[in-house]
Structures are given as C-alpha cells and as structure tokens.
Image 1 (cartoon, helix red, strand yellow):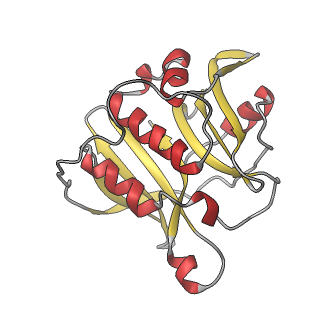
Image 2 (image 1 turned 60 degrees about the vertical axis):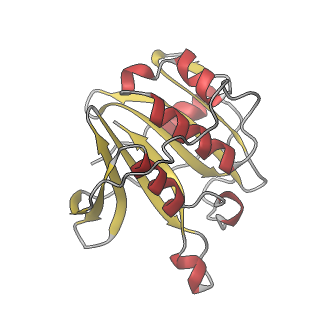
Length: 212
C-alpha cells in the first residue's frame, strides 16, 4: 500500500499550488507483463543544455520528467540541486525535515503540478510528480494537460529501457502500470481525460508518476 504524505509536504512549502487530498490506493497485484520495447528514438529531449525558466505547460513538465527519469540511476541521484537543474524550477526544503523537498506551481486556471522527495518510517523514501486540481476537491477535465497522454508517456519509458507491467487491484480494476529497470521502478497512474463523452472517458492522461 502506498502512502502519499507528499501533498502535506508541498502544502507546508507553500509554493503556489492548492492543497490536494487523494485516497490511498487499494492493495495491488501485478499482472500482464509485457516485453520491453526497443527503439532508435531513445532520447526524449534535445541534447545540450538544461531546462531554462519555469515549467509553463503540462507537456513541458512531462518532457522534463522523462528526461530526468532517463538520466538517473535511482533515488540517490535526486538531490535538491539535481532536481532544480533538471526541472528548471526552485526546490524548497520542508522546514521540519531537510530530507523532504520539492516544488509546486499552477499551470492553468484548473490545474497545477507538484513534485518532490518524501519519506516515512513505514513507506521508506520515494519521489513523485503529480498534476493537482487548482481547487481542492475539484475534478476538472484533463484535456488542457493531456497533450502528452498516458500512452505517449509510457511508450517513451519503454523506449528508454523500462519493462512494463500492468498493475491490477484486488477487485480487478486497472490501477497503474509499473516500469522497471535494474535499480529503479517507476509507476504511472492514468486518469480518463473527462467524464464524458465516452471517447474522452476511455482516453487516458497522466495523473501521477511515482519513483522508488
């Protein structure tokens, strides 16, 4: 079971995005392992230079996340300075615990983003990136932040060497996909683009990226 106190961390940092509370996912099982894809298109961002300036769009945020994931060997690489250089935005420490740090900011009138490193005695240490509604408790359409959708984002993870596994919870629902390579596992959570029409219900966007 995954704990998600990073939301509380980012709220205490007061970095501009509204607080967001999410339910803890149900216990999960892993099924439907797929073979790793190979591709000549292994690079996800142009070579030369770090990101400059703030994250302005969801596509920008997810592109930076892909470049970050491609470059690291594991959580030990995700120092505050490294995160700031790769994500291009200031990273702030929690006042009560310097091992907890991150950033958040608005993207649109309805959505913001947050990312950071967190840890608890029971869950250990992890990094997560998530899109959060600007208004706590709201559930807006994800259309404006779905330029890089779940299929595109996860295919790029396979292209840079990760092996995909489908993650099904106990009642048979699809919860997320795991992506593994030696020393590192990424979990990506989908969300339907909108509640209607049906084609948008079935079109999945990236809601949350979790690294262990």
